[in-house]
Amino acid sequence: MSFVKGLKCRECGREYEIDPIYVCEFCFGPLEVSYDYEGIKGALTREVIESRPKNLWRYKELLPVSGEPTNALHTGCTPLVKADKLAAHLGLDELYLKDDTVAHPTLSFKDRVVAVALAKAKEFGFDTVSCASTGNLAHSVSAHGAKDGFKRFIFIPASLEKTKIIASLAYEPNLIAVDGNYDEVNRLCSEVANKYKWAFVNINIRPFYAEGSKSQGYEIIEQLGWKAPDAVVVPCASGSLMTKIWKSFSEMKNVGLIDDMNTKVFSAQATGCSPIVTAIKAGIDVIKPVKPDTIAKSLAIGNPADGFYATQVINDSGGFGADVSDEEIVDAIKLMAKTEGVFAETAGGVTLASAMKLIKSGHIKKDDVTVLCITGNGLKTQEALVGKTVEPHYIKPNMKAFEETLDKIENR
Ligand SMILES: *Cc1c(COP(=O)(O)O)cnc(C)c1O
Ligand SMILES: [Zn+2]
Figure 1: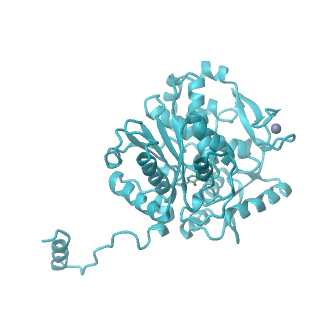
Figure 2: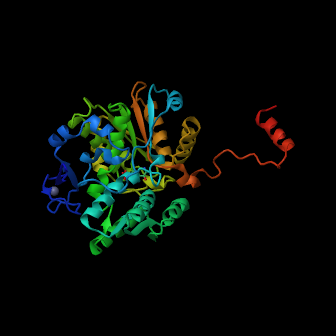
Figure 3: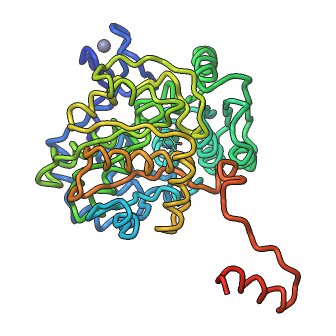
């Protein structure tokens, strides 16, 4: 049984049936999935969720799928790491990393959104899936699409990290590397989507795709022992994940799975691409598009589709935003690795470095139970650390050489 009511325009409220559509015909506002929360209240209890397999479908009543999902059965339920050493370093009492660096199968949170998008593409009867990607989405659509038996057309900026391009090519999709930035790739894809009847996961399937992000929020609450955190720091590209984390927390309260929710939501961006944080700092909700220039390529969207709604979430929740330099990103990646043993990609560096600024500025307080959304794995953006790590100790294969080196390391 499905509790999905339909699609609803975020601007004028007009309602639509479930279809592969994404804009309102009347006001061009974006469409969002709406649910029968009263119905879910009776059906979805903590006990029901806890009794289910550890994947994102354990919250299926709150996701836009019909019937029993048959794809992505290993996606979701990533660890919530209690980060005591990092907390001490930052001066916080209680800090957690929501660790999607180990998301299945492609080591980023995009596996969640693609799981839902492809479930829906199958329901709608598409045989081809496609996307415009800053890297991780390409990887995830390539992988999930291979397993689920879709033809795949993947569009990326040609300037992406080599490791991410190779990661996608391993699954043999049709990879279209465009000479342009993400915003140009996205514009091209909108034209392609008008002509070819494909499931573009972040265009015509976007309302469903975006809902997949909510699973990260549900898991955070369940893993905190059915409690919402006081503060959550979310890296922003299009701003979708941030709005959906907030939606997921609000829904958990609406359907009675938690008693209260007073979470402040914070946006993390790279200074070289920070249209959302710039608007927040200026106290306005108008997003001024920028030309991205940052090592955090997965977040390099200069004209964020959900930027306006992201600023609303930040304001409604009493949160704020911070932006950080490439150098601060690299330092934060290394700090997370050496304190908590979690190797995040550049977006993770953005999130931690931004959190550090928000703690310093007093926006996040010492006793705020804080969660950082760590959304992708460092193995995918190793370029960012080339020449910026400690060096190996090169030695000849004998004991004398080793012990000389050991003496040097231990300063003997
Ligand atoms: C896509 C992505 C995000 C955020 O994307 P939104 O478009 O804001 O939802 C965050 N981190 C990583 C690693 C990503 O790939
Ligand atoms: Zn409308």
